[in-house]
Length: 275
Ligand SMILES: [Ca+2]
Ligand SMILES: [Ca+2]
Image 1 (cartoon, rainbow, N blue to C red):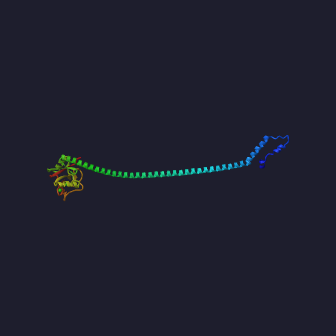
Image 2 (tube, protein in one colour; image 1 turned 45 degrees about the vertical axis):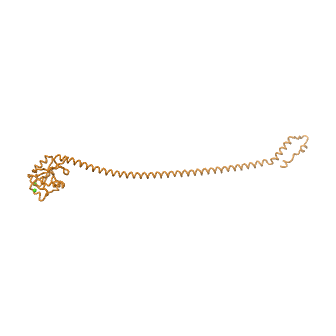
Image 3 (spheres, rainbow, N blue to C red; image 1 turned 90 degrees about the vertical axis):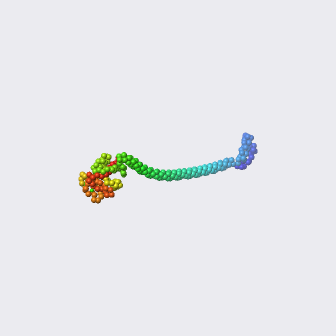
């Protein structure tokens, strides 16, 4: 083929053509141009094919590189997302732990404060109960004092003396048992009744022989107080009393009770209460 490219056209052949043959100069020039063109591109079809293959490989190489770059980008992005998730999860866990620790501490402090308040409340309640009891005691004592003073005043206004919780009148003259009792009744009272050691001590401190409000006039041996109750223990008869020589009760200092004739005369003690 190279021979064809570089071989000059045989102009003589044209010349040797027959007379009828016409040698066109334009055609000759055209052929010369084709020859030079062929000379400049000795293998244009092969070269283009090779270039096409090279371009295809380059494009494939570039596509492969692009894919690798994309994969790398994906990996980096995924790594960043995972790292971000881990950081977020760590932060959330930290906040939750902090929250529960804070709540736990607050609950502990509140429970401690509640216990302290409860303890203070219990102490105050106990103190209030003590103060209430003390108040009631003082009120009772006050009422007793007031009541006692009022009672004393009332007793004294009637000519009696307040001893213990009752008003007593001690006569200055002597009368029979019945006359003595009547005098007491005239004073809205009655002869003294003794039903306890304390009352017995009161009459003993007088150190006088006096009539008391006990008699067995209705039935011998059955002693009845003037308030209608029958004699029961304790009794303070002195030996050998009662010796059945009387039906009315006399108190004898340093001795005790004695049954005596009701017609005899004696001092007497009236007793009454003030309501
Ligand atoms: Ca008698
Ligand atoms: Ca007697």
